[in-house]
Length: 290
Image (cartoon, rainbow, N blue to C red):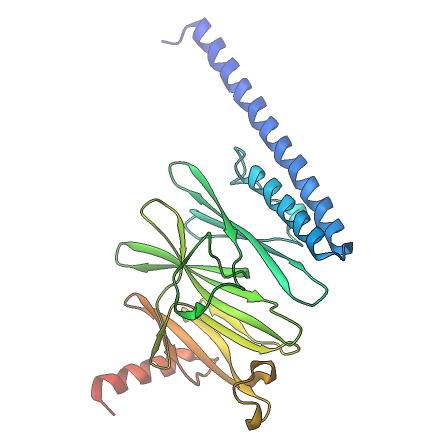
């Protein structure tokens, strides 16, 4: 039975825990306010090196906020217009991405992956986009990240293994922009790894990057009903511009990817009203060889 003293001790511990949690939330609140103020200030700065210093300061403050107890469930509401915040359906992964914009119309990206297992872990994403060669065919880690702002996270299963697929956008430069399909998995040590298996037009690749005209609008979305990634097919405005992505844009046809046997598989020229129809036709073609 509980004694009077044990009940009093329990109530004291509960009260202490509640006060500690309130203190943690207040600390995160303060850090969020600091980040918001710096985000607003960095817009007015013209000097590139000064922008980068502010960008690093924001990243450091944000890292300390994410390492604070209570950060997993914290909403960061006042930062949602500046920072993309995604949480996986299994409640195990959160991704935070944002950028700073330079006068030459290029970008630098910042991000964190936060994971929840037996404890919360935080990994800074170091944007090395300008240094990575042959990026479509490379597996990368959080210290060598192809920067982007992610707007969708998908959980995918291959047997007992769980990984994630990310849809993102990169402003690139004054001529073109990019959309990206990126894979995310975790090493045995729990560290994020970027790269997956995609098959596009019978070619294997580790990530899919679409580059197209700066003024064009490209659809890249996940269709939950058909469990497919649907996207615009890109073509040059004129044949003479073939191979020059700044002249590419949607041509009013659509392609798709569906996940099966551990990889994303390509379907060309799908009907966006029923992309499953093309998938069934392709499987029939493979089965009967016509």
